[in-house]
Image 1 (cartoon, rainbow, N blue to C red):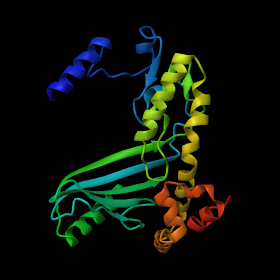
Image 2: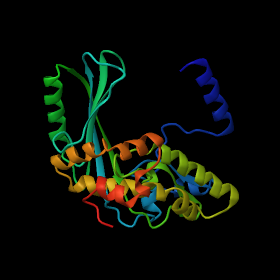
Image 3: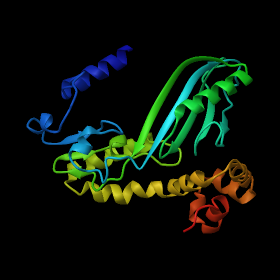
Length: 261
């Protein structure tokens, strides 16, 4: 930790007490000491379950990221992505260099159940084929739950605790920040957090639900066609302009033929 970070941490701790290594097992531990409780305790949120915010305690779907740090020769400006059902289940795999000689090799699978051991072994096959040395391995998990509400009395859920992660690729940093901002606004302005979330956050996920449905029905040949469609000049031009293709129903049907309205 450098001097700037240490000073910033000390300033924050002066404003807000931080209790390190304290396990919160229930809302009652906090109820008497705080006016507002914001649960940011991840995709297996104890507080969200205890407050009865989940429609079901069984996740709607799960995501598993299995990866390795690999050593070899890499172009730091080049990222490789595989869309198929060999290296992942209904997901994608990629290698991202973080130097000329090291990279992250990752498989991301999303479904009702995922046997991550299979895809770890296939990543090893790929590494051997490319003459990459395998080093540290890791596994990360994600779960999506259906919520009846995102707040109960003085409790609010944000980030992964509220399943604010898009369902196609499993990215969530943007919506973790957005949910926290909406939560702060709801508390400060005394307005309905559920209404803010459903109006300003959840609509962002609608295009990703279309992609997810398409991936769940896709065979390897479908992934090939999906990639080729992005060579269409109109689609390419729209993508480069930052305009979403989902505003055009014809383009949506062309890119995702498995999905029916």
